[in-house]
Image 1: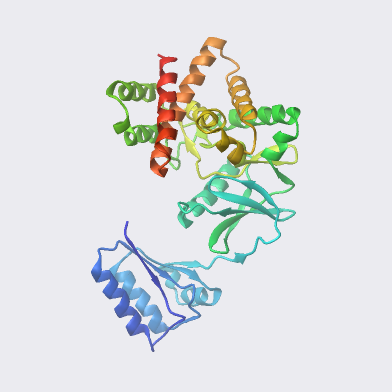
Image 2 (image 1 turned 60 degrees about the vertical axis):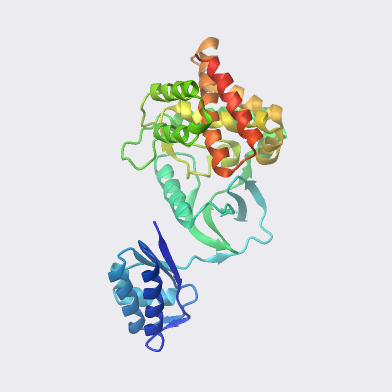
Amino acid sequence: METLHYQLPSSLSFDNCELVEKEINNLLSQQNYEAVTLDAGNTKYISSAGLRVVLGIKKKIDNTSVINASTEVYDIFEMTGFTKIVNVEKAYPVISIEGCPLIGKGAHGAVYRLAPDTIVKVYYDEHTTIEDIKNERELSKKAFVMGLPTAIALQIVKVGEDYGTIFELLDATSCTKYVNESQENTDAFIDKAVKILKYMHSREINDGSLPDMKQLTFGYLEKVKSFLDEQTYNTLYKLINEVPDSRTLMHGDFHLKNQLMVGNDLMLIDMDTLCIGDPIFELASICNSYYEFSFLDPRSVEDFLGISVDKARYIWKELSRKYYSDLNDEEYIKISNKARVLGCMRALHFFNKRGYPKETFDHCLNDLKESLTKIA
């Protein structure tokens, strides 16, 4: 969807409203925009004439919104009833993380402690939009209501040029630090992770609010189809198709960088990947994080997860074996190889989308084909 972003002036009144309206209409005439976002971040005052400009734009482009409105400007929109006509969003509070301890860092952002009872997750990834952040906040609330051990999302804030979400969280420490302290902690972490997975996978979501990982995986396959020979493609399609349809709740990116230790409990902090599907897709993602990536680039495991390659592989093998404790060794080996295949396919799509080196992509493709032979 093409959106026109327009920065409103410091004051929008009778003196300049005609010029502003003319500029916006001129921009609209140059391209077929489907939405208009009016940024009021610099606007200190808006008069009735200015409100009529906004209303005029709304009549032309129904999907018109005002963002970053100060409290004073927002009050004007609200008192005149405009908030019932146009979507008006208040400016996000600005905070500083200077001097705040870093307690966790992932692929998309970092977590800092603001106070004894609050943390802030700052999103540094250029691919993460404000809509993504809002969505994660809503998913965090949904997960909390469903009984998952997750932090309570409080509000979205500006941190420098980036955005963040403040969460209520007591006595939190990074899981990386926890598992690196001792082998006993590593085994305890695995037990806690399996317990959360079992609980999460006992829940079904039937309201259609979450994406279906089986359908997403079909999409991943189509995105990398051109890199596969016909036999491999058909085998993968059949493999995905045979995974049972399921409404089971899944995290979607369940690794220690998306978790924190709070006291003696494990808590999830990244909920933007929440989805539904057969648990094999969850185990596929876990296999990527701890096992597959350790073969593709051992340094990525050490740099990203902050643990040794041996510890990462140990976590995968122990976690997956305990999760599938009801299977015999032959059944476990087969399903763990199936998880690796599905994980590799998801990784191929990710590597292709993000433009990773060809050697990494080819290595992953070879691992996928090798694992396929073990489940045939």
